[in-house]
Image 1 (cartoon, rainbow, N blue to C red):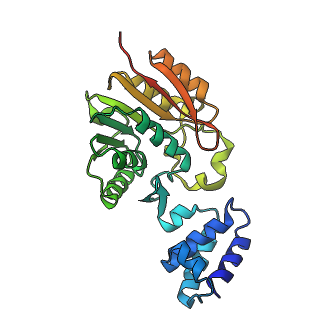
Image 2: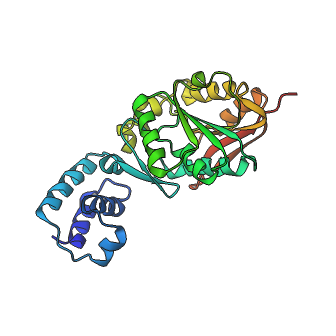
Image 3: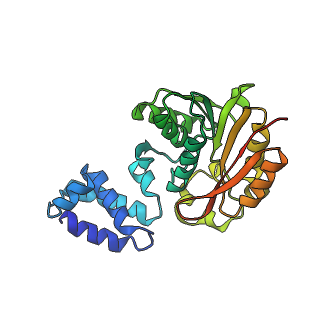
Length: 278
């Protein structure tokens, strides 16, 4: 079977996938260690028996609903390659909006940034590559996720991100920052989407929050006033229907210039505000 024949077969097999052709291309590249460009240019290349066996295993895993990123162990984010595992959420394109806004609102001078619930480290590492003059502190409660984030930082080659294990603000004690960013759990426990698609395989603790998905968001907003410098910014990713509720909490805690921004799909995704203490 050639590359092209396998791609056609796999695309027809992955009928339940939102992107069967792209899934097939990624899996083929993963097994053969060839780039997409190579595969397209030499599509008549014959697959070895060993490669076909490996592809069969990968295809069955994907048919069962396992995310491609967990099968390959990697995911691209901000044009960087991150290792992933089932200890973390898979970095998503929507979260690049949080990175983009963080970079836009960062002071032009060197400063310190806090990333809460860093997971793979995607947010802080992506920002750190763009702002090597700034110091990033990334906090993560899950030890396995924290080790993975440290590994990603080393692989990508950033040396201005420091990692701490703990629950939200606890590990940083009394430190203050010019910016706090976070993509916390924000799905309510009864949401039917938790039993659908890729999220079935992702860690529930990184997805679900009580109080209609707002418990952790409220904790982060309320805690931020103790850990932001005057005129510092807080940026939080949230669910597409939570913008008004999140804005309300920001304003209740005295944040100014509160605004919500849509992700690249047009859904309300990131709310930010500036801390000001009279």
